[in-house]
Length: 523
Image (cartoon, rainbow, N blue to C red):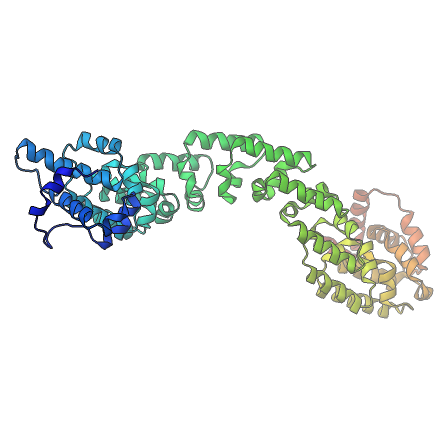
């Protein structure tokens, strides 16, 4: 409380504009400290405060008698107690600064701090040395922060010790960050504590990241808190990743936040993946962001897959990105398949990538099949991979088949053939060209009436067996489709032997052989 002796002499004081006295503009910073706001409406208290300020602003640079010295220091202490600073805090400051600080200097500094939107009360309570800062020093430091791209108020409010740093020290630290490839302003704005790190400490941490295969600058720019981690902590985390089968540098370079995960948290997540039938290292190496998923979120997603008839573990092991899909998105896609007549679980279990297709893309593909007179649902249910075919690819394949049937003068339509044997739409066009040549050269006229089921059965026989069978025919010999198929199936060789013999025979078969070599080379 302000000492009564100050009030006793206050009538003798003449205030002038040159003197520092309190006004309405001082209310906010005073209230932030916790000062009693009633002083504004209490003339006697205001007069007492201003007398105290005048007394406490007197300089003690020159020798003064003990009574005068004590009066000035007492005034300074009384004002600091009035605004809300604790006796312990003032005692702490007074150990190094017995006379405390002239009050006009202190008030001037508070006004500067207030103009910069600093929480002066927090600053002084956290960093008592700030009691002694001069206004021009604060202005210089704040201007220096700003010139370096730092949000000065945010920095000092979050890290009060920053106001104690000399401008040249701050510039050195920021230059060190920049030299290491770090966006210095971004780092300090996101992680105010970083401005307190010694340059050699920062260099050691960055060198440690690099030695571990991490892109150090990328990591710190993406995850500013990483610069806080002790090198031994980082090494422990990277060793933990490696022990779990994870490509540690790849993970951290792709997902910088991973370096902040506690080892026990990572082990829990990997164990959760494994318990769900997922190849945990494969998942995280293919999709680094998966290590950021909470175990309960993963279990929810896997349960959702299972409820939809999907083999959840098979899906995620084949297509790791599926673990990132929201349950409602998966349900929408499965409902879209079903509405189109597709056996949705069968499709996704046979072809996991299908769950990645946008509903509008699937509808476009199915509409394209239908426009070509193909039974779209039957086709996809029989051959799931066809849902992956681009519409223009299907149209090109159908055009090729129509031309082939017209050339061979067969009596059924392309649509009948494809609907009977959906897998035909997935055949390589060059392979079909070889088969068409064989049919045109070695099938008799009765083949024109061959029904689609017979063709379907014949197309299941490997091409190499037809090449070998044709090589054993007399020059110009023709057969029915069934007879040619029987001759081809009579060849009993394993896959490698069959392919080797067909390749050896092909050069002697003229145009058929040339076409087969082209197909084989392009396959």
